[in-house]
Picture 1 (cartoon, one colour):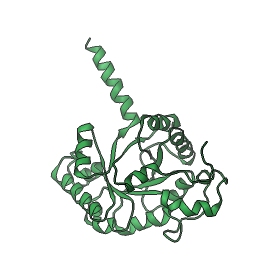
Picture 2 (cartoon, rainbow, N blue to C red; picture 1 turned 135 degrees about the vertical axis):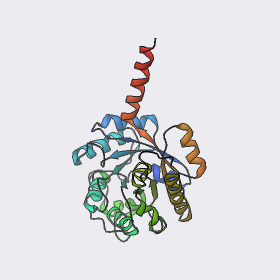
Picture 3 (spheres, one colour; picture 1 turned 90 degrees about the horizontal axis):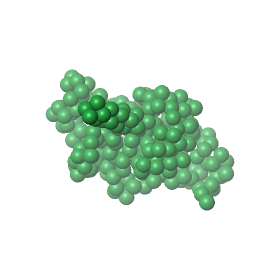
Picture 4 (cartoon, helix red, strand yellow; picture 1 turned 90 degrees about the vertical axis):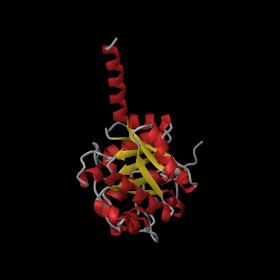
Amino acid sequence: MTNTTAIRPNLAKRKLQNGEVVYASSVRLPESGLCELLGYAGWDFVLLDGEHGAMDALTIDRLVQGCFAGETVPIVRVLRPNDPEAVMHALDLGAQGILMPHCRTAEDAKGLKNAGLYPAEGTRGFGPGRATNWGRMSGPDYLATANEETLLLALIEDSEGVENVEAIAAVGLDGLWVGVGDLALGFGVGTDRDHPKVTNAAARILAACQAHNIACGYPARNIEEARWAAQQGYRLIGFGGVEQYVMSESRRFLTGMSCS
C-alpha cells in the first residue's frame, strides 16, 4: 500500500543526483491518458507543455493525475519566464518540477528558484493540496522534504542566455536545457539546429552545467542522437512528444499501405 503520510518521491531527480541519465517525453493535448501511457512506457518524466500546449490549471491538474497513474514524474513547462504565480500554482497542483522557458539571466534563474522552493531556500507560498495527499501528511512533515523533491530546470534558448550561461548555472538549479529550436531562430539560421552557431552554443551550455555540477538537457531527434548526447555528458534527454509519435506511426503505416 502506498504510504500516504510521506511525500511522493521525485524519482527523476533521484536519478540525476545519482549521476544517471533521465529520459523525458512531452504532452501538449489536454488528455490525462496520454501521460499515463507515457508513464507505463517507462519515461522518467513527462513534460506538460504549458508554453506551447492547450493547458489551463484544470488541465494541468488532470495531467498530473495521469502521470501519477502511470508512475512517472510530472514536470510543467510554464508559459513564460518570471511568473512566480504560475510556478507556485503548478507545484500546488501536484507537479514535481518546473521547466522555465527563455531563461536569459541569473536573475531569471533566481526567480525560478525563489518561486519553486520554500523558505529558507526560496520564497514559495504555502498552499499544497495533492502534494500533501490532501492533508493526510502534516505541514511540518511535508516541508521537511518538499524542496528536496522539487526539480527546477530552465531553458537556455536565447543568445542572451548563452552569454550569461555561466552565471545562470551558478545559481544552483537542478539543470539547464538547450533550446535548439529558438536558438536557431535567434541566430538567424531558420530551423537548422545543426548550424555551428547552435552547436557551439549547446557546447557552451553543457560546459557551464558540468562546471557547476548540474544536469544539462538536450532534445534528441532519434536514438542515435540520444546516444550521442549521453556520450557527450547530457543527462536530461528529451525525445519528442506523444502527438508526434501518433503522427509518425500513422504516416508510416499509411504510406506503407499506399505502396503495397
